[in-house]
Structure formats: C-alpha cells, structure tokens
Image 1: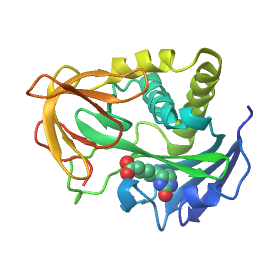
Image 2: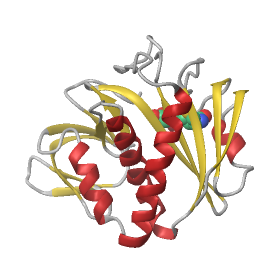
Image 3: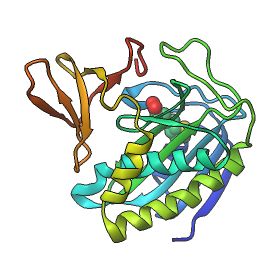
Image 4: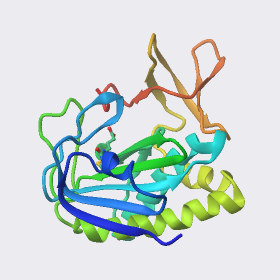
Length: 229
Ligand code: BTN
C-alpha cells in the first residue's frame, strides 16, 4: 500500500478526520482541539507532538490483533532513533516506565482508524499517571514517516505470516511479563502473575489459586502506579 499523507495545522481529532477518508490515507496535524484518548478520555494535543491517524482495512475477527501490530510498529520506529521503548499490554508505549505514546483504534464501517499520539516535545504535567516525552529528539513529521514505514512492514507480515511474528516481537518489548501485576476490569481488580501473552492476544494472568485467567480487555497497573485513569 502507498500511504497518502495529508498534513493540517489544527483539526479537532485526526481520528475524526480520517474516518471520512479512504483506506491508505494518513492524517497528520500539528495540534488537535478535541484529541481523543481511550475510555473516552481527552488527549491533550499541544503543538510539537505527533498526532496522526492512518486508515487501514479491517481483518474480520482478527482486527483486535491490530492493536499489537500498531504497537510493535511504533516501538520499532522509536528503536530506529535510539530509544528503548517498552510495551504495556495491550498497546501502551512507555519509555523508562512512563507513558510516551498512545494508540486509539476505532472501527468505522469497513475501515480501521489507527490513531497514534507520540509526545515528541512535551507532555501534560497534570496527568494521573507518569508521562514522558522525547525532548525534541525527532520532529513529529519525521517520526510519522518512520512509523508509517514500520506499519507497512508489520501489516504486510501480518497478512502473509499471521500473528506469530508480531506476537514474538511484542513480547520482546513487553513490560511486566513474569511479574506480579494488577489488572483493572470493569467489575473487579485482579492481582496475579503476568504469565504470558496468548496466541490470540489475551493477557494470561495466573491468580493466587493458580488458575490462569484469559484477559481480553482491562487496564494493567504496574507497581501500584496508575497509567490509564
Ligand atoms: C490513549 O489514550 O492512550 C490513546 C491516545 C491516542 C491519541 C491519538 S493522537 C492522534 C489520534 N487522534 C486522536 O484524537 N487520538 C489519537
């Protein structure tokens, strides 16, 4: 696929603009007035950071696995500029334990809108979780191109070879594997050992009674710090 990139000074949300664009479009904005985060949160979008949304196709019941495809793409792009990112299940991107980037996937009809925000130059200082930025190490537009290159590579591999290559790459970046973690679910909070990632992308949590729970949605908390709310 050839990306068709459109850059704007300000939009409400690049995900919202992208929803009206054909597959292969990429919307980049220097700032957003209504940046969207996960769980209906706001994504503060001051100038200097990367705000981009790519329009991809969906993959039927495999579409949720794209969360991992996008995460490894962003992590690899960051690796290319000498960073050592970590991935927190399923697709939070951390640097030195603090949130550096966020991914918001939204399905609109037969399109998958992949929203990516990376703190290139700054991050809000009043967040309820630790956050960090790249201190201007790379410009937002240059980073967008690196991410798109990786996105092309990993979506191509996903289509030809399935989830396994992504699964292994994701685990190389995974934070908390083999450790005690806390997972917040809609109606309960569980603590256990993050045993593994399942081959369908679930977090396998070994509970104190030694049963293993397959978690497909939830918020992972590492060493008592809150990352998502
Ligand atoms: C998260 O909460 O971790 C996800 C944040 C995703 C933010 C990006 S910025 C570009 C795109 N447009 C939006 O409105 N949100 C995503």
